[in-house]
Image (cartoon, rainbow over all chains, first blue to last red; front, side):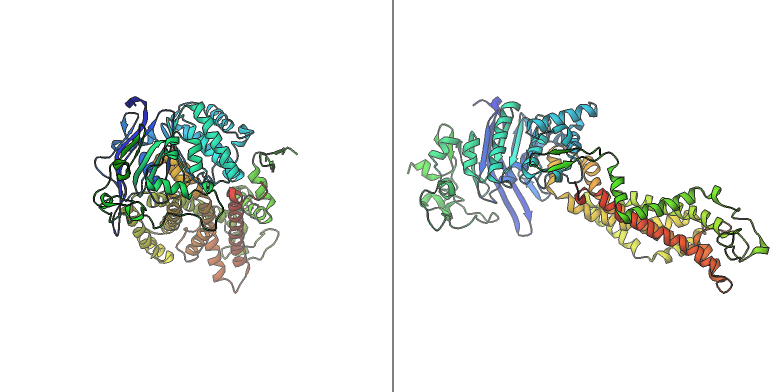
Length: 327
Length: 296
């Protein structure tokens, strides 16, 4: 794949947090790419660094975060890590924008929706009436009926699903090249989830933007995304084309994650399958593979040194010695 | 009825309210309505003092000193035979002037400093908080007495003292609200959509902060009026012959054995103003906070 087809190219990104107990190494040597017009999904347990990853792309990290030297976040040819504050303001909302998990808290409760939406267009020197017209158009596009009038309304006058639609509309106001969605359906119920996913697919066609989609929900990822990235404890353990990855999961972690998906359990049983153990301490890391302590197929090389990404197929790789050794 | 009823996606009817709906909402609240009437009464009396006063507030009438209320002197006269009603009207001007100017400036100043402390860097926050705590450690009256002794009594001195002593209150409320707001998801969302620091502060924090501050301000107006009255009562406020409710009370206090009317006449406008602004403030909070709107 040529360099020009990539919207986002994250190389060797490492992020740590200074804490009282020491340096928490939240992300280690993460490489991900988002090609043009593709939807890339990120899955993983809570605390595996998904949010840290997307917040580093927008440089919205907590003040105690350190982006380690050597990290590169290349967005359409510009390195986000090296950007000044004014360049970042220019980047956010205009070229990359974000949809948050909980639509109940992602809108300012005391400002009308129309004002919040037109506020995003502050960069454009066009009359207010024009801005309001654009905001109304955008609301109509995400399926809010009677958009023109509802601009006057406040967030609490909308339902959860409608609020998430508004958040998506706000994110698309400046027609960004990349839309990041941080578990946009986790706070919604299943029917709304389906609607929002359908909407996002539709909007991708219409606005021709790429998406980075974070979720716990494997079914959702399989349905929506073109490529998947599986993260574990701050590392990318497996990535690849969505069907290839789901059908030929190579990393034991991915396999176990798939087994744990309640939708995949065939026979009825009392206990849900789980992955035993918990995510390792990210201050004091094991010398070998990060997943080794929980891995059922652990063998000699696992404890010696960390694995590199090994190719499973053309567009599919996993950080596991099993793949290298063909076991 | 101009309000249209229509169905939303969820099926719940939404009533569209006409413009100035907040005013109607204020009037629908009995206490708000009452407060508004009292405040309008005071403002009207103060603004129209020149026209409404039956006498010049400086004119002496020694023959009629300490008169009880009568047709000629609606609220009687003071120890120099000056018409109390005229003096109350002009005193209202002083009271409102001091209150509005000082509360207005401390509101603006406190809002600015509080947002700076809450949203700015940690060292600035610590420095400002230290300053505010130091200022708050002074009892208001003591501080006022000290300043007045040095600079001399005047209206400007009172305003200065009130602003200095009330700014920390506004700043603290603003700061704590800012601290809790700055980590909310919607502020993060605004930042992710490209809002810079100034934009976040001006268009997203400010509207969230105004409601509690307006209530504090409306409660502070009567407090400031009583501070002015108190200082004038002690003879440290406005200089005679300029009338003030405090100095009228002071005069009345000296002659309370001769006539109770001066104390009564000086006290009632204080009560009306205090009640009026307090009720109005309470009602305004309910109206301006969109989360509290019941029937929308």
